Length: 87
Length: 303
Image (cartoon, rainbow over all chains, first blue to last red; front, top):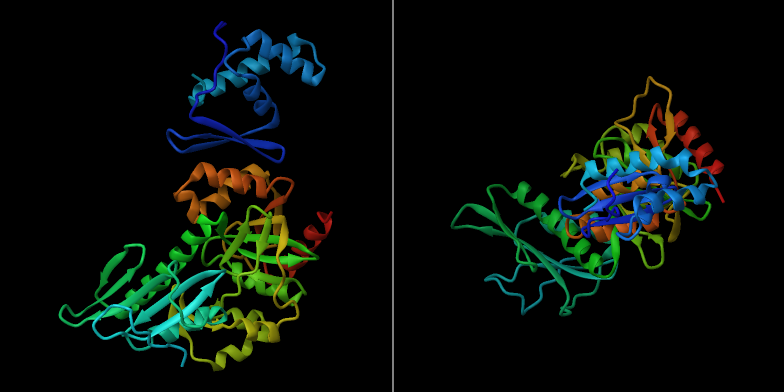
């Protein structure tokens, strides 16, 4: 597991729209629609929170055990890496 | 005739000039080619304005270049292009007027979305779709059902007030539409024109107000957005599928001039405009059944 705090790229912004959100990458003009859960995880990635802290905060938001959400959070973060929106 | 010559405008022969104020944007159009100003006026008659030359006036012109056997379209934003025939130049002139107005509106924080807009019980419905997908016919059908028209070509979004504003430009009606909208049968007796969408009739705002019960609506907050999914399929049942507002935001942005200038800014404004708005994709069938489905959806999502 990567121990570096997940950090959003400074050229990527989040725009909330209704139940979803849009990640806009100014480097290539791409826009990605993400669901509410992914948007919450994005906002927890502030360059300070470690992965464990992101999982903990996300689990607390939904009132779930950390073990139940860890895989989902890692999956979302992997997707963010694949999209190139994290440092 | 409307055109008024005004001294002080450059060009060797001081061609006639027509003056307009389009959503507060002063526009002056000049041409020395016969029929051009009449064609422009057929579209913008509702925006006629007294002659004047404010510093911020947007100027567009179409001039004959006798020595080159060509036509020049130019505007006060520095655009210039030569055309071999007058009709192509006319379409370009109409396009430049649109661009000039949209650019000025953008500077004021007003976004123009390539879409129609109507008012249903005090709330705005935006209808977006490509040319030829039946947007105008659907809009006119809704007017027959009593909705009020805000615009046929551009939904004008005032992002500060979160309102869709009326844009009372003449509508361009294609052949076949009067058969679906019987109140417009009188258009068949009028001479059509060759405009951007082919052979079309211009339906002036006052003609529209007399012909259809809904007439023109007042500025209204956005409550609904409909994306047309291809041209109508008269043999099939209409289908209306809800879609996320975020997806709708991106699709509307594609039809926004401002997005080409500032995508991020447009994303923020359109995103805020659609927050809490009911969005759906419509595959239209025959007109009346489609209108039935649409009205039911509008009523279901009223506040």
